[in-house]
Image 1: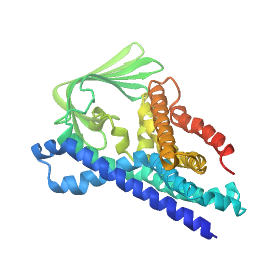
Image 2: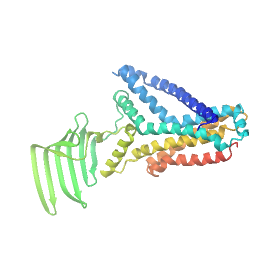
Image 3: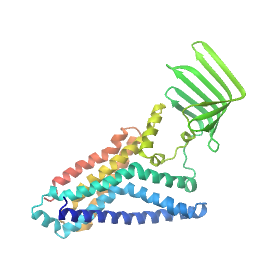
Image 4: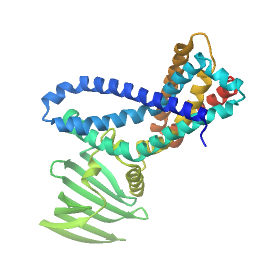
Length: 362
């Protein structure tokens, strides 16, 4: 059951947290709008798309990205005020242990981490889908880095395709080849002048085709010049689309399916998708670590007060972000496993939090 002290600290924690969120959200929206206002005017984008689709999704995205940092700032801000007003000294002198004093902080951090967890895994990706669809349609039209010339791709661990040129506007491939292997031996070869995507899930129509089947030294040849044939293989038009932030548009269920699908096709380069998957669970845990750090720094009354505490907190937040980006770069370059690249900053700052807690005012 919550005591008066618990309700008091939880109220201060959450009210300060959401106030910080509100302030930073307003600043972020103003900055983003000032950068994009010219394109909003030039492009045929409607007011409804801007007001009801783009900016609600943008707000969810930017708040989710900075959620742990907001936690640190809010903890330091209101805890430092309590220390400056000698409230913490009075609480500890009344016989409340520091561990007991931390209980409402942990409850508040758990609530914030829970919101972050469900947001990261479901709601933020749905918002990103709306936001990035608008951004790639009107604002950044050249962000699709999907390859369309000389495409070599595995559609299964033992099946490889080659496409000389793929035209995205009508999902048509020119100079198509499919090679199927068994025990490192070529057993089937399909060649076609064009391959057109017919429809979901993975139906294609080949024109002017040749099908060669190998059985040892024997070869069967089927030639369909001027003819067409419908077939299926594990390839869709979406496989030729590769946006820089494509992984953030998928919910966690979709993300896991995509990773499994790519690995099942023999494609091992799924690093950025795995990094996104692990980040969604690591960020909520960061809220606990930064809460410990914030309380340890701000609970002691020092000369300089709130300003010094905020400076230390923002400095630590900046270091955390720097280490996070640094480790992600190593993970992206496959120097370290993706899960290590995501969790390494949390491990380092968990050690810092334990050290600061051991030296906190008791």
